[in-house]
Length: 358
Image 1: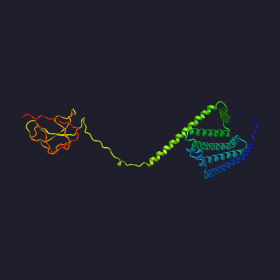
Image 2: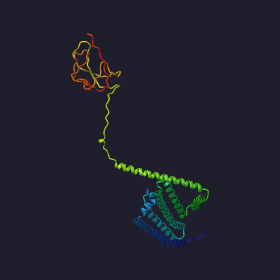
Image 3: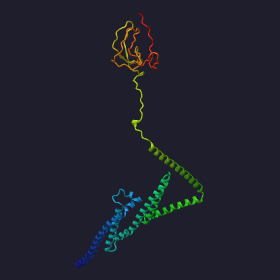
């Protein structure tokens, strides 16, 4: 037979549990609200203080500003956000601890204990980046004129950043089993190379390499000095040069030529017949060149002087001239006066024609 249920005791136990839980829940809510307000206030205070002291400028000088260039938060806002979430985590830990020991409270306690290590790791990264940037600038300025100056500056910067990353990982206890042996092996390799190179058989090869590098550095230094002197001399010469305008410069003129194999100015041919003289006819312009052969046409002998335009007035043919050639009343400017040597002519002299037989 089933035992009777004690409803009264059950209700009393449930009521006792509710009465015990309600104060804890109220305390949990109060802790969350107060912690949220405190975190929000601290975020504003930290942001204002960092902007007042110029924290963003320091970060940009250190080289971290390029990492945050595409982010909508600057360095001060990001650090204020970290403070805000850190306070919220602490608030959650305190709030869950109201209910007594529980897994959530233990997890939050571990995260809160890790936050200071993360902050120190961030500071290490920022400081290492700033130091690497400064060393790179110094080495580049000191050895910038050499071909390997930029390479040495980059190697020094990467080495310092690598040390900072290894130190930050060791601080937050991440991959310590990998980073620590790597760092030790690297430092041991560097020390071994130095010891063997200085006191072992690598002294002479290293000495030869150093001599080669030093000679190369001297040659490059002399080349840079010569280039700088030439640049300054050319700059001073350019400043002393007088600017001549283009309009004042003389222009060269070239004679124009007429198209054709033997381009000659056009002449006026006077048609006539051998035998009895005839009245003058109107002159007809004829080309001195044949359209097919390019040679002067028969009967069209060029004359010295300016060519006569078609339709211009000409001197009629004299009937007393038995050869039928034209006798001009005015002397030809291309011909010389009697007793004077005329200018050299590029035109062929026509042959003398025999007088016609009457």
